[in-house]
Length: 440
Image (cartoon, rainbow, N blue to C red):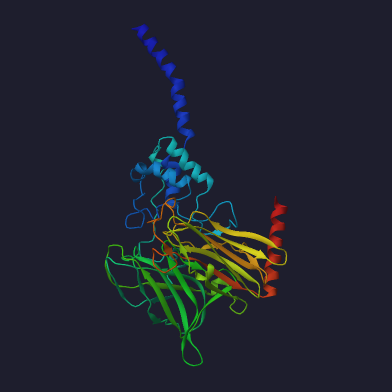
C-alpha cells in the first residue's frame, strides 16, 4: 500500500507541470466571456438580435459559437461590421465609425483559433439594451425629435418590380430654424423593401410656384441619421412642403398604407449655437460622369469619373458613395490647380450596396477646400463573375434607377465658407497640430 501511495504521489507530481501549462495556456488566449462578448455587444448585436436585419442572433455564447469560423473570416477580411471605408487611405478621423480596431480583429481571430472557448461565465457583461426596431436610433443621444414629418400612405405589394412613390406633404414648420440632426425612418414592416427614401424642402417663389429649396435628408439601406457639424446651419424653412422620392423593392411582404417618417432635431439653448454666425450647409447629390448614360458590357468593367468645384472656399463634412450591384469601389480626391497637387480624401474599396454609410469627418478634420479646388469622384464597376454580388454577368447593364441598373454618384454635405472663415479654420488646425507635436 505504501508503495502504491508513493507511486500515486509521483504520478501527481508528474502531472503538475502539465496542469500548470494548461492553466497558463488558458490565460494566453481570449475567451468569449472576458473579451469577445464585449466586442460582439458593441459592434454586432445592433443588427444580430431577434427582429433586426442580421440573419442570425448573436446575443449569447450559445448563439455565437456555431458561427465562430464565419465570424473569423468576415472580421479578418473587414467585411463585418459592414463599413465600406479603407483603413489605410485618406482621412481616418470619422464619427460613428463601425470599423473594428486591429486589436479587436486580432482578439476574435485568436479566440476562434483557440477553439472559441467560453471562459469563466462570471466574466460575462450584463445584457446590452438597444432601441426597438422602428424607433429613432439618434434618440439615445438626442432624445425624441423636435419635429416629425410623414409621407402619405402607399401600399407596398409583396412581389413585383421596383416602385417609386413621390408625394408632396406640408412640412408643418412654422418658423425657419437650423437643423441639428435629421434621421429618416422606414416603417419596421417595410424596412426590408425600402431601398431608399430621399426628401427635400420646397418653397414658393415670387410667382407662387413651388420650387425645391434644399435637401432635407437621404436614406438608403443601412444608413443611420445625419448630424450637422458645429458652426453650420442646414435650414428648415417655414411654410414649406417636403417632397419625397421613395424607392420600394418588394421583398415578399405586403405592407398596406406604408409611411416613411423623417425626424428633425433643432439646436437648443444648451448647444450655445449662434445662428447669425453659422455658415450655410447643404447636402448635395454629385453625379459621376454627369449621372451617366453608359452601358457596361456583359463580363466587362467600367470606370466613371466626375469633377466639381466652387468659386468660394468650402468644407466637406461627409461623403456617402452610392452605387448598385455592379459597383465595387469609389474614391474622392481633391485637385489644387495652383500647385498641381492631387490628394485622396477618402476611398471605399469594398463597396456593398446593402450597406450605405454617410462617412462623417470628425470636427477639425473635415477637408477644407480653397476656392477653385476640384473634387474628383471616381467609381469602378465590375460586371464579371469575379464580383460576388453580380446577379448576372451576361447582361448589359445601363445607368438607371432600378436595382438591377447601375448608378455612380455621391451624397456630400458641404459647408459654404467665406475667406475669413476658411483662414480661421486653417489657423485653428495649425495651432492644434503644434500643440500635438509639443505634447509628444
